[in-house]
Image (cartoon, rainbow, N blue to C red; front, top):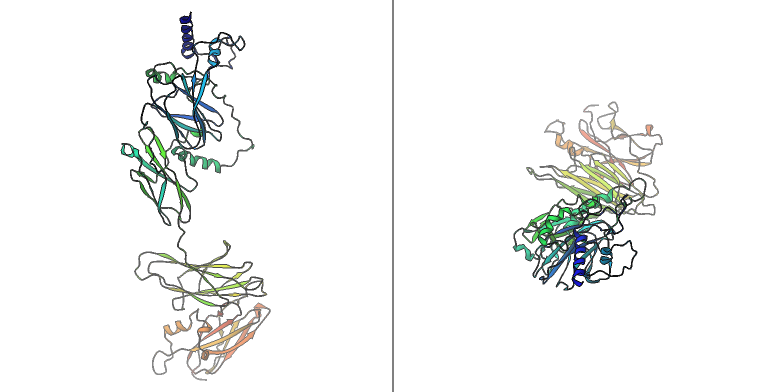
Length: 605
């Protein structure tokens, strides 16, 4: 009788494992009363990396058995990116079924035998997103080993490897005793890294892969593959309708399903693997979620090879980057992650910010380039200004000049005025005076920039800043800066000049300079160089001798169309050429220089 009971139990196990396929539990056909509702199962093969898809909140189970002669076993689990909960347990099943059925009569005897009392021992458990493994001797009384994996945060996947026997499996690269990535040097656009060599690198097919990104470190190569996809999905706008998509897929695997390979010879496992079918009509290996199907593309490695030193270049200044190093086994398609690090590149070399004092006239010099130089470059200078008074108003006046204060035609300087990162004005400078009204901030940043071509000449910029008390805007300028002379009113020792003024009461000063003749005798034609020097647009009253000043007068006309003033200049020599300059002297800003006027007095009167 005892032999008959053992034979009966063995035949029931074979019927459960290799028996007929039962119809789905939710089939419209009537199920027989003795049906065993089997669930999809997965057998963990020895010596092969198994990829397991883990939908959020669902527990996946992998089953395996060991031979009696096995002395050691090692189970390695490598999560992709999300933290996992995994545990290894051993299950012992009794050889004979129970005589009395604790459930209803509709339960079959094999199902009752499977669900009946049996010992289950937890061997090991782990929670985290790092690769971890269990190594130890097998349990003598264990019939089945069950590996449970679960992801609570998101859909992910993991790689599982079973090794039976002493020593290391060699499926995953080994990390050194110090798995940290060290930073040797940080520059403005490059970072140099180093790490301890991997003991597995001596084998053929192993190398390193260095990844860099500005977001965060990755715990595995799989996470590095999926990182860009998740970043793209995070940037997508939410779907119309607002609600999240409901998961309508079937439930997870049962608590104690049977695997067909548990009592099958190991050499037959690979042949029968393709025949495993679950209740979904697919292979019983868990289906990869759609979000994970496009994550197999290899991430770009900035450094790849056997060297344990890498210099990452072409980075942006003043940006924090994260660096990860992976030891890669190309033969098995596995990798091991070093402990990543991060570094912030240095900021760009910026010119010093020079403060501007109240009412100070500042000459800014751009050196240009030496003749014959081949490379173009950019020159820039920074200044700051703090206006006085509670109104915090100010006026910035600028004028572009040549290297010696003369003409700057063909040479462009750009001025940008900003405050607290907000640009107030940005324009190019020329020979004409530029006014920038400053209002509403305690400090301002003035940025002068010039693009110098190969062989470019030097350039100077005339600049002044002043606090403007009790003003609501920049002072007005004359409608034209031309000086007019009257031929009928020109004599041997005097000339009459006229120019446009403004509706504000202002001081106008007239300067004169006699031009030298070309040669001896009575020649009176001035040289071109002398004329250019005398008519330089940046030649201000502060650079003129007092002997050249003729007169100063106040003028005001509320009607801009009639704001014309005149002056008679006497004490001149007959038949000589003079250059006359008129300056609008202002309390704020640089004096406005009118266009120089060259007049020759009459020889005979």
